[in-house]
Image (cartoon, rainbow over all chains, first blue to last red):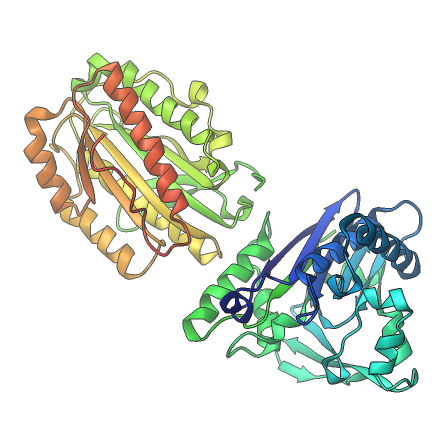
Length: 277
Length: 248
């Protein structure tokens, strides 16, 4: 029922500065379920290229665990894995500062869960695309590793008021007939952002869904390409076998380099294709 | 990357009545492919070493299967003579789907030499299939080998038509790069004619493989597989391999 693929690339800024790619993406499908994960390491952290990978793998491991797959269980498993990784690999919190967005689908439904910032997009079978870009105030996104001090420093950085608005979602819809149209924006309180934002998908909703994709915020930093157009282009798959997302991103970057510098920031995306029943 | 399947589709070669087969593009799973074409002369004059020619082809496939880039290679094998025409043993397909025992039956050489038609089919199919791949987000380059022991004497196409295909493909960037190599085996007596044909047809290189001894044919197989590997490693660089040997 599901196929998945993912890709991540180093951005121009890191490439020229001799820094590693701090984005990472994973996806998987099989046994009647699929997942897509993207993580973005903090550029001012320490070894957050490693951190992004550890967070992604911790999330993947959490999704493979036995028992229920709900965001609270996943969060607990993620934190347990991060703690173990810190111990085994001598990592500090500064190494693990990375966002995570992940999608998890089964034939009975699923969800997308956002821990940080980035973009979520749905391509529906009727050609519509719904996309939402999540941004934190002052460009200070949530990182999973902040749980190590119970988010104390993070909350302080956001002014200390858990009820204050801290996260906003800019939403757009594309339709073949009407093009891009702005949708109602959403804002979230600091405590909501810390708990993470969840978008559920019912089995009925999945029936109309063709692709579900999660992106790091690098999709909004492609030179001379608006993020909404980047999302649409990254969902315009020509074929869907094998490395379909990698092909699409490689072609987008190749085309973007003809008119500009291409991705300025590191970029990652992971996609789940929902096969028609 | 995983190979998805080997269902094939028939494609026309632009500007001709020739056709070729290739794996359905929608079934291909990797991000990039090198299209390899090996075209082998089975005219009457090759009868004495037909078995060795067939073994050479099988050796090329086996060697390419060992390449770290084997998952990114699609190979088409063709024989030609006025007796069999332009006979596709198989179209572009993943190496894992090629069974030299089943796919390469013994050759039965006979007939005259439609060398130009063979070159046209080799180059034209590679360009058309590569263009189809590129349209579908794949990165693709190509390398074709035309192995012959004699000069052209009965084609319906002309060297200028082959050259036009190649020039047009490069101008329109239908593939990231395209290399074509004419190989003479047991062809000392018609070397100058083959070199002239190579120039007129716009083929990149003429290589003399010497006499058709088992040793020389083994070296030919190694040359072909190493050249394929070099061209495959050049994918993504924007140009063809710079490491194709000038001689065998």
